[in-house]
Length: 78
Image (tube, rainbow, N blue to C red; front, top):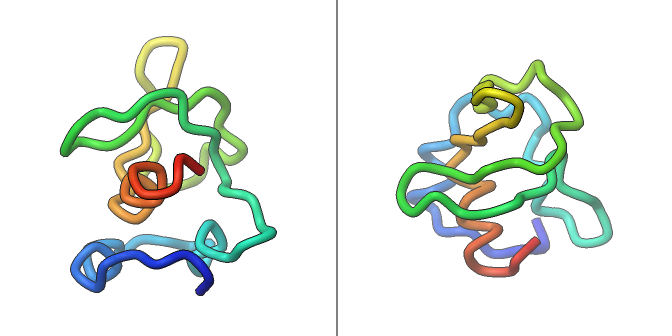
């Protein structure tokens, strides 16, 4: 993994079916973050896959509850 994420966050991310692809530099995260929801996740601009177990429908948009995705955005704005 090329981006550093805390061990506690990684251990909380138990349902990742993408094998942490978002943490590889040069790769792209599955979903583009629009804004952070402190301690709850992220609003997503565009969901690339609606089959993710961390993705929740919210009206006409999406919320990502993945702990790793949230920390990645907080640390690197990626």
